[in-house]
Amino acid sequence: MPTLSLSANTVHEALDRADARHWTRNPPRSPRARLAFLLSKSGHDPATLAARLHTTPQALESFASLPSSQGGDQKDSALQQAVEREVIRLWQPRIRRRAHATILHNGGQMMVSFRAWLGFTAAAGSSDDPRLRTLTLSFHAPHVEALFSARHRGAPEPELVAILSHALSACYFHRNRPQGTAEKVSIERIDYLEFYY
Image 1 (cartoon, rainbow, N blue to C red):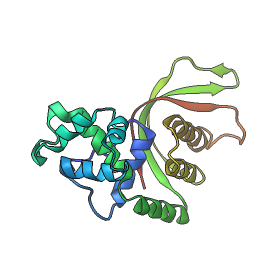
Image 2: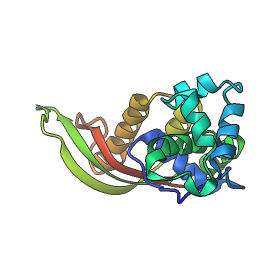
Image 3: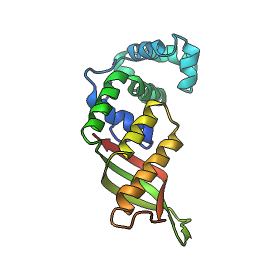
């Protein structure tokens, strides 16, 4: 696989890329091997895989015929990135779950580093002007468990963002304030996000 960018701008991709640190072996590297792996997870149906990657079976066939050294050429970058994301999402699910179980067994702590536009809600109302913030902080259970559980069941991105927003409110904005405070934060848009565990 080409150089793996560990930061992402979606929660599910950031979780998948953090999980990549726990792999026990590397995923396939060549375009043909990557597509063979993805087809094995799609009932060996090129049309199903093409729909998931937002492309056509013909484009997949053309991509698979590229030499390994050309898998990341600019003309194929969008498809190459889609294939890479899908391989990362599906690679070594048992290793992923084992790593998550170990993390939760040992206290369920993760570090989160991100830059995002945040909206704020307080007793006086909400802000209509999201503010760009760059933060690094530590999340603890049950927020970590909620993220892992949602990822395991394939929760949609808005649900993952809501879980992350709730964790951010609890772990950062409320840490020195009385329990039950009405102030909340919502993540409006993520510029980059990285989990460490």
